[in-house]
Length: 172
Image (tube, rainbow, N blue to C red; front, side, top):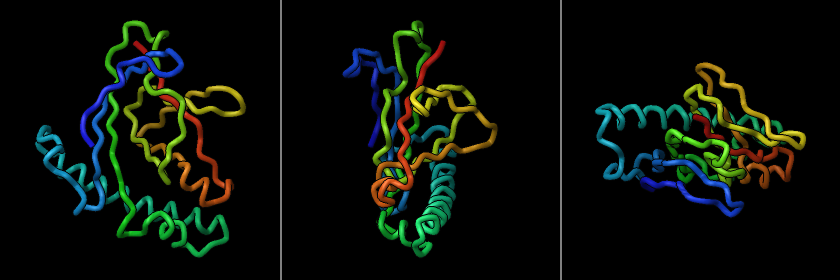
């Protein structure tokens, strides 16, 4: 948990161009509020409420995915820790102004090790998905959340649900 930066070359020689803040938001008893920002003044309250709503959304999505596998609706949630052990982590990415975006990536290509990833975006295109052998830029839809299936769900579903290869691009 904490602040970090990837303003460095990755294994492919490309420059990753990202600052981030990463912390646990749920369950409440596992939060370390000492590292949470004090500004803006409503950060803690707003983030706690967001985490509560996101946790409820995760339950609903995991129920539907369980039913899609022919399982009882609570099975996948149980397998990823249930109400007691499932952790929600928040990562806030910031991509500084990039004077030469053709030389950099925001985040290199990867799949997410998690069960689910929810992305709340700021309407700036940059998320790309590897689909049918090529990189496709995700559309920015106002008031939407992008969701990825993670590696954990791919494994638990025996590959029925796929974890998607994705990356973050920078621009001027």
